[in-house]
Image 1 (cartoon, rainbow, N blue to C red):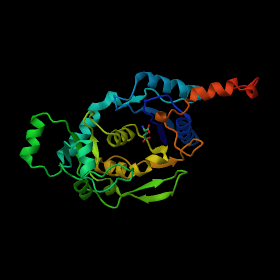
Image 2: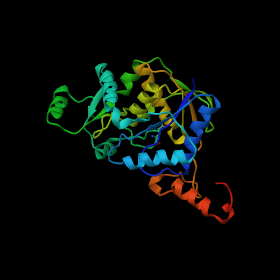
Image 3: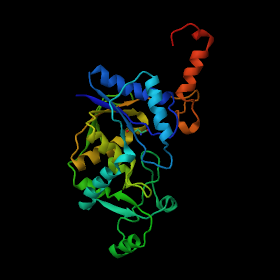
Image 4: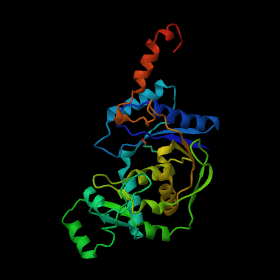
Length: 277
Ligand code: GLU
């Protein structure tokens, strides 16, 4: 059965862009007589707040949406993500990376498709004794995917099926190598967005991933992780982004008006008097 999900991070109140994303996902499911899920993506425990999780539920209910319970909350499933990391590490596809952001910025000679500095591979070939000593001394480290090794174990080329409203549709070729050795687990967190999102989509039986066009490049990585782990391939529908008056993407951090404030503006507007809002 067609299954979609809305997967916000509880780092602030929902804004109009989230409302569009949630409705896009919910409508895609309902039109097909399918299932609609809500997932809380709160792996970044420094930025996410339980109060915002409750506010997300309230705002979505206020929008008139319903979803299946229980809602998957990623921070309750860190052991699942550790198990995926261990499986990939067991195949020699993962290595610890001790670099700081500054180290990476200094050593990088390119950019990933999302504009981050391309990882220069510094820790990939660390001598085994040095790596073991740093781990034993408790140096903070992330875990990275060895992209070249990972690709060597996959049937290539990879592709995905796009059915959305933003950009080319049909069979789209993937080029995950453009991202270099991606982080699978962060220094302060046992997973990364890419690992958690692909694991959970598979675990929850999501068959159509709907999300904003800004996340479209990441699909190349998600197809790689799905292939490495033998997870099913969902279809993708990327949607347009809601922008402000200056054409910039709405973002919680830029202080875009929360949905509730917009609702209040509508309800208190003189034209709304007597209207059934
Ligand atoms: N949690 C992501 C966000 O809030 C969405 C992830 C996804 O839909 O793949 O932007």
